[in-house]
Length: 87
Image (cartoon, rainbow, N blue to C red):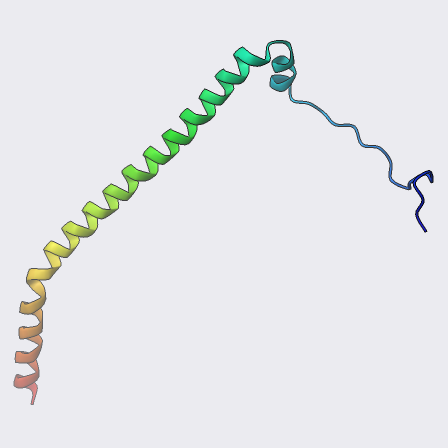
């Protein structure tokens, strides 16, 4: 049974702090705002890139549909005509 005063079998683990975060301890307000702005800008840039890719894909699909749609009735008519010729 585990008791509050008994020693544990787990060894303590050292925690390494990144250099950037250690620098934040000296000047937390100024650097944390810069870090926050960098994070927001990064997220915004990723979203913008994704939106551009989505728009590009949407335009490609629209162009493909407009190219293939007019030829579909012609292709169906040709297929029907070929079936008539074979029978």
